[in-house]
Every structure is written in structure tokens, then in C-alpha cells.
Image (cartoon, rainbow, N blue to C red; front, side, top):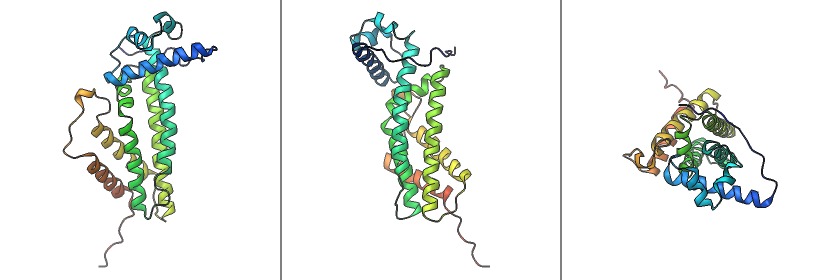
Length: 222
């Protein structure tokens, strides 16, 4: 059954002690989420780990679903900033357009890999929670925009004609393959096995993106 949207945001507690207490609650929920790979834990477990009473938690959120939404919002805000910084800077000053695209692909893929334990549980939770799904889509769209902008900027820097449509398709292929390889949206015990290692994946992704965005070769003379 799909979870319906609840309160979308909460104001921070006014007292420093209350802010510190609720920060412990969010941190405990995030730890459990990453350890389990799913939302299969209770507020009682969060309470015990955070050493904050269950009554105090319910004084701030209506239940576990709302707490997870708050955790996601906070963590994805940080992730969006990191994506803009790392992927946005990738490819700048590269020696060639091919090198630039490889750097952009690598930066984004490494970002997804390093945040797998954060992203994967929210992929799963988004199946039943519309609020979590929508927040995840916003981050996905923001990341897509950063990737496309970086590729188009690199093309312009190296005098390569590239359409936004081609850059968009390159992202779709890159993202789909990366998500599949990393097993985002599956539990930690069900990560897909791959016939090639991470570096080979990066090489394959870079070549694939390059084939999509590379300028066509001039026709051979008749």
C-alpha cells in the first residue's frame, strides 16, 4: 500500500539541547538504514541507538515514515551540492573532448558508488512512499542537468558540435548502466554480480558515452 504524503518539513527545535537530541535521532536512523539496506527497523531501535526517548521522537515526527523523509531530505541536499561541485568541475581543462567525457563519467560514477549505501535504501523505500520517490526524482533530475551541462561545456571548449538531445541520451545510458552495476534499489544481499570489475566498468562507460557524443567521422571519398 502506498504511503501518502505527510508533513513535508519541520522547523528546527529552538533549544540547542533539542536540536542536538534530534540530530542524534536522524543519525541513528541513517546508520540503521545503511546497515540494513532497507527500512526494516523500528523507531524503538532508533530510540535505543540515539539514546533519546521514544516520546521525544514522537514529539518531533508522526512516525518512522516521516523521520525517513527528513533524513532523506537532509542527506540528498548534501548530495546535490556534492554532485554539482564534483561533476560540474570534471572535464574542465582536459586535453581533449574524449578525455573530458571520461573524466565526467568517472566523477559521476564514483559519486554513485561512494554513496551506494545511502541511495539504495531510498530507491527501495520510494516504491511505496510517494514523498521519498519525488525527492529522489528531484535529485536525479538535478544530477542529470549537471552531467549534461558538463558534457556540453566540454564540447564547446573543444569545438565539438553536440546537441542537448545527444547529451541527454548519453546520460540515460550512463545512468542506467551504473545503477544496474551498483545494484541500486536492491538489498545488500542481492547486489547483481558482474563479469567485469569497477575500472573496466568506467572504461566501458566512458567509451559508450564517447560513441554517443563523439562527432561523426567525415565520409570516405568515393
